Every structure is written in C-alpha cells, then in structure tokens.
Length: 442
Image 1: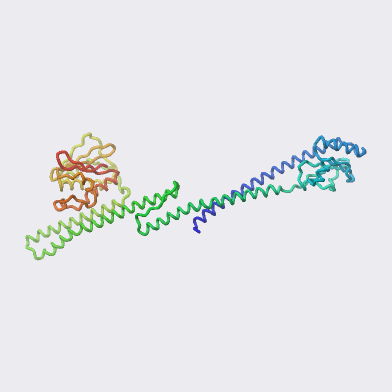
Image 2: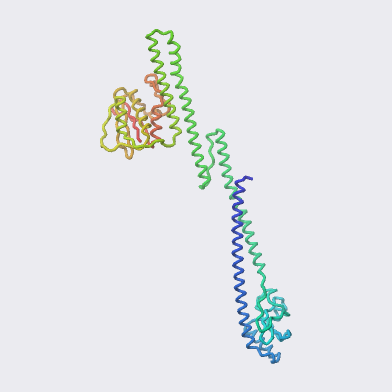
C-alpha cells in the first residue's frame, strides 16, 4: 500500500475516532446530569408526598380498616401505588395499583419511615425493575425518610449510544477510504508523469482533473514541461544552425592559412585580412549564440533601470552615422528595462539597416500608448510581405542576401527576444517611398 495513502487515511480515522470519543463523552455526561437532576427531583417529590400522607393518615391506634381506607384514598388522589407497613413490618394495606405492579414484577416501592414507626411505600408509575427498596428493608429509625437507593447507569441507553457512534465511525471511515484513494491516485499519476518526462519524453503531459491543489500542481508541471520542451527545441535548433554557420568561416580560414606560406607578399596581406575577417565573424557568431541561449533561459530581466530611449537612439545613431529624427511631442521617452539589452537591440537594427540600406538610415522615437516605439528606417530592397514574419526566426536570411551582405541571421531574432523580455514586440513595416522600417516597441 502506498505510504502517503495510508498516512492520510490513518489521520482521517484518528481524527474521526477522537471526535466520536469526545461526542460520546459529552453526551454521556449530559445524560448523567439529567439523571441526577431527575433523581433529585424525585427525592424531593417523594419527601413531600411522605409529609403530606403521614399527616393525613389515622394514627397507629386506629383500626387497620380505617388506615387502609385512608391509604387507598390517598393513592387515588395522588394516582400513586402506595402501601403501608406496621412498625413491626406487617403489611397493613396496599392500593390495587401497588399490588398489580408488584405482581407484574414491574418494580418495588421506595420506603418512607414515618414518625410513629410505620413504613410508607411509594412506587412511581413506570419505575424500572430493580429501582426501589425491598419489602423487608427497614428504613432508618427516628422518623426520617429512607434515602433513595443507588440507581445504576441506564445501560440500554448507553449501549445504544455506543452502537450508534460505532456504526457512524465505521460508515465515515469506509467513506473516507475512496476519497483518500482518489486523492493519492492523482498524486501517483502526477509522479508517473514526471518520471516519464524525466526519461526524455519532453512532449508528455499529465492529466489535469478538478480544481484543487493537486490540479494546480499538475497545471504548473505542464506549463513547466512546455517551457522546457520549447527551450530544448530552441537550444537544439540554435546548436544545429550555429554548427552549420561555423563551418563557412572555419573553412575559409583553413584555406587562407594553408595558402599563406606560398603566397606572394601582396597576396599574403590579403589573406591576413581574410583571416581577420573570418575571426571577427566567428567572434560575432559565438557572442550572438551565447546571448540567444541566455535569453531563451531568461524568465525575467536581471537588471532594471530607467532608460532614456531618445538619448540611447542619439548615441547609437552617431556611432553608425545615421540620421536622428526629432521627437514630435516632447514627452519623456524613457522606460524601465535593461539598458545593455536595449542598446544591443537598437544596435542590431541599425547595423542591419546599414548593411542593407546604405547611407539613408534614420532612427526616431515616439510614444505609442503607454509604451515607446523606436523606428529604424532605411532605403534598402525591403522585405516581401509573405516573409516579414520569418525574418525574425533564428538564422533565417532572405534568399541571396547572405552572399551579398554577410551576417549570420541572428540579429533580428535577438531583437525579437529582447523586445519580448521587456513585454514588447518588434515588427517590419514598408517605408513610404521604398525601403524598410523596423519598429521596436518596449
């Protein structure tokens, strides 16, 4: 049996047993208090009846018939079974109800010792067998009333209560078992799902049922699994494309190194420049691959600060000799973000525009709702509309552009990742008069 299932079930059963014990104890105490109050009331009433009757009965010198008639009269008035014994213990008289109940074995009377030595027996209707004194029991002398005999607990009622509590306990304990099994079955299913995912089946998901904490854990696991799967897929694609892109500069470098010893002096300088160019391309490729990998794994920004995007645009425009468009409304164009990443995104857009658009490159910033949009425009060949989304995919380059302009195809993909990490986006628009306009919204 599963340990968690057993622990939860035993906890439920223990709490239920404690509740049943406490409930039974409270009910039993209540019944005992009620019996004590009833016995006290009965004692008081019997004492009152004894005082009333002994003052009204004829004395011991009166004939027995007269005493018997008076006793039967009081029995009818009080509607109580009564009997009277002499000081010597002989029965003087008994009412019909007393004799009938005594013959039926329904009970015996309670003795009251009268001042003149006689004994008055009172039997309440409905008294149980064993309650009351024996007929030969002698009350204490001195005319005091005999004490009420000890009444044992009402065993039938107590046993009935115990049986009800036991049946209730068994019923609830039996009903708790399938509930606990259902809960732990879902936990075991979640555990099996995690084990399957851990073996490498990244597409595996667990079933989400209900709307409780277990379902919330299952949903969290599925979300985490989807993110891990996407991250691993992205990493595999990035590694495969990076491996492919590394071959070209490495092959060119290998060829240049093999030719450099036998080359003429002027050719040797050209080969050295070729090697330097390939080294720079390799360095840029490695840097962009590392940054793309880090952004894939980044859930939130590591550094947050207030960044002046207009000032950032002015600095980067001056670096590549681009035209800075003035802000129209004069509003503050600053956002909270990572200044280094935002600078990298803007620099990639400007270098991309410079590579494809020549000298007619401009950059501007404007407010778009509660965000700021950086617009980088050029007069290059533009992008076919059906490919305006694919250009932001890693290592994707327009046909023919790689041979003419170089690059590894990670620049725009990094811009998109940086924008998304800042809660923004990037899009391509066709520029009026020809060319492209890339809009970075953060």
